[in-house]
Image (cartoon, rainbow, N blue to C red; front, side, top):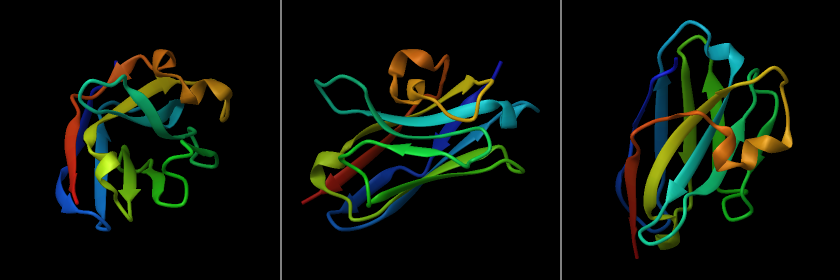
Length: 128
């Protein structure tokens, strides 16, 4: 069992930055691939970024490449999402997700259904 708690959301102007954090419980954090997803009102939850167990492999949605950076600190059981050059269309509830993974890479990382642990979400609002 893993419990995930997101923080760092808020209101920011377009062009600004925010850093989201996701703290995970448990002693086996290094066994889990981690992902960030988001859901805007009236839309389906969508993939944003993911990182492998070791942190060696990262994956991004095309819409955030070059603006967002995912990272993890395995000593602190925490994954981060640094969001720069924010746009109004980035407004959404951002969710952290986890899945125990045998490998350190894979195409499953993009899929909402692959993850089996989710946080409660944190609101990000970007004003124009």
